Image 1: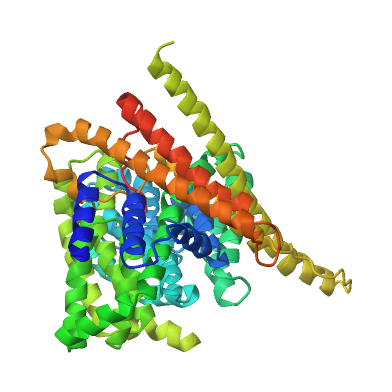
Image 2: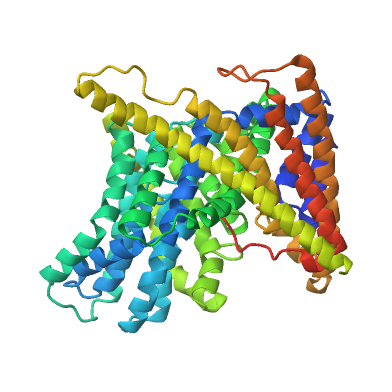
Length: 422
Length: 181
């Protein structure tokens, strides 16, 4: 009866178009009132304790860093280097698009930021060079999703936070699948455009691009090198990357004025204001679920019904692909990761590998309607009809699904570097 | 000046105030952590290399202070996210009613969200009251925590009141942001 009421409450909240914050607050309050001690101040207490952890600081710093880079010219300079390098390949601009997204992903933790930063430079360039519009859109939208697979990645930090996993391990685990996706997407891009004209490598152009872009290319070295040499924690690394990007954009590239920083921070506050309170409530809900042994019961029930880890993995992947179509990635991780990660562990899956599988699934959700964020943002940014964007994404989704299956089949793709450093 | 214009001005000033608080908080976080790292990893090593021992060169408790600033910035951010239509919202139920009902549903949704947030504000103030009674203090810094916890309740209050204004004057309601991640 109580569970049926909870489902009815959930349906009413969806119908009433409530924000995720309210939905989670209401569910948490319901659980406290029905199954807990009925004292709702515990919710705020748990929210306070949940957010009172230093590791969370990496999130606003990476968001700020991404915003600074989007307003500056770091992306354009990276694109110029990779365009010069891939010019001798037929369809080089298409390959450069995927490589540029991968390179930008190694300094940005967000899919939309990566898509917009690279797409705003390369989409007009590809159209001008005679590339098929549908292909160009698909390449930019799918390339953008590399932003959350190749470290740093904001969804990975959130996953680490709610499942108490290691951020550096998750970042390392993202490298293999990120490279696999980059290789698969760029090979497809080359194959589809193999009849496009190529031109010899222009060493002078490449040298000029390298000279202009050297400061941008140093960014991933500082950011990821700092973490893996043990100099910085992920939070400190994000702060250093932010300081470096401001320094480069304001004083070297001269693309950003210090007063622009106000707009950058307000933009970050919007995301912070929508994310951190939800994160805090999700943590509060997780605590009450753990306290009431809901997760353990869920594991027991699942194991009674599904004995095979492979069957569990197929079901979870189907669930995540559907959820990816309906929810944004951060909401999905906040709600599902604390429930699914212990389940996956009970079936013998490593928490880090499972995190990667989860993010790879939800990454595909960026390209699927109705709430595929890359589709929605691309519709406005590139002024293209939604139907065309959906069709443009289809072949790339198929490639991403193949890569997902490969990572599930051979988890070493994700874990090779983690085990190597462990 | 009519009611809508007055409400618009109030909301604008209110939004500006929250932006200033959030910008100050996030700038503080970025600045103090950067200073800590630069001091510890660069200045400290440089002075040691020069043979001068000036003791610890990082900023004490920088991350603790940053977490407190994050609480302030985040809960000021609830208001900013409300003002700019940036809250994460599952759109699962949007198709359950005819499209023509959209504006009316939005108005009902705003009232409902406002009520939920006012309830959360009430619980938040109760929580702060308990914290004041118990004289709870932060880890490491040993400061009283209730002034920081107060921002949670104030964040809910600010967002809740704003939703009521949107329900009263739908023209002031921001368009839902395309999506954030």
